[in-house]
Picture 1: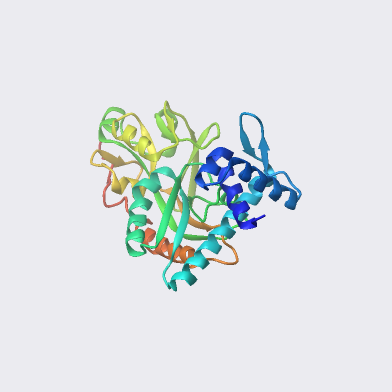
Picture 2: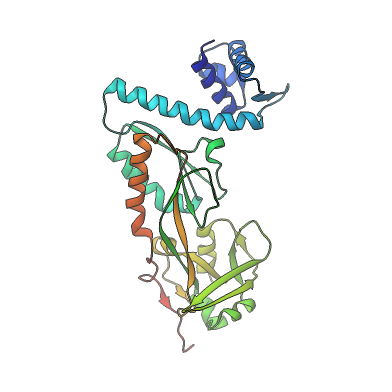
Length: 310
């Protein structure tokens, strides 16, 4: 059995959930693909795929093997490309995971510049507000906002993202300014979906720290959607500074400017702990330098404080 080809066949079946599609993609017979995967399972002594007449799913052992195998094959292919072409520049595919709005507004233009500068690379962006499993999903680099749990993957915090409490001038005109965090319990708070129940917003002023449970008629897992609803005068929202700078914020005002929403750390997480290919090292450094301008504090230049005299 050609073990390397069997590895590739397994990865393709796991991705497509189809032996026939894999056979077509690899220019093989379906029976050949089936035998290769079965041989691989026999060699490893575990079931990698669960097969029924209607579906093919990856087992828990298969998911673990899939993530590690994808990383190894990617490194092998890059090594082959570099040796074959005697290149000293990054080569090959890099899979990058990031939050949806951050990816579209901030990261995608940076990736455009990266690809223009390093034309032998290819980028696959996986944009989702759910945390990707780097090993199982074959992710090379993840961009994550917020504190990250202890992980087997190395991470690097590259800065902080500021957040602002904002509302439209029309909303402030109708409901009045907000002077204290406690007043938010009576406001329509547009919340980012966190997967939990009650929403708690925290504010700081000097040494003082206040948390308030808020509620409202709208929750979304997309910051840009919250910004548009907020700008339309439907409530107040906590939004990241980079989004406020990039969007149409002419009608948004900052509430309680004496109070600050705690900033959020921005992290780069890498699936490669020991051997970190050139393409990964290059992208990590590029992201680190290009993302820094979006750190503290871009919102101040585009937001005006609420009129305390209203």
